Image (cartoon, rainbow, N blue to C red; front, top):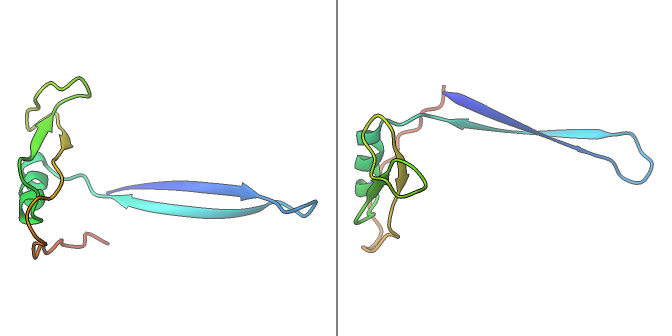
Length: 83
């Protein structure tokens, strides 16, 4: 699990600085697990690319790009990975 934290620093007029923190947890999905979940969610013609140049991926090195959902809504049950 990776957590990204972004802090917004702001102030109104001449008041003291204030801060707001936004956190996002990311779960690293394995290649096969992510492809399986995309198909279960109703995405069709899912293709995995290894880089932004369009080279096809291998399971060890993948950037996943997929087509828009073509079929109707799927009953995908995404498992929460919150700890």
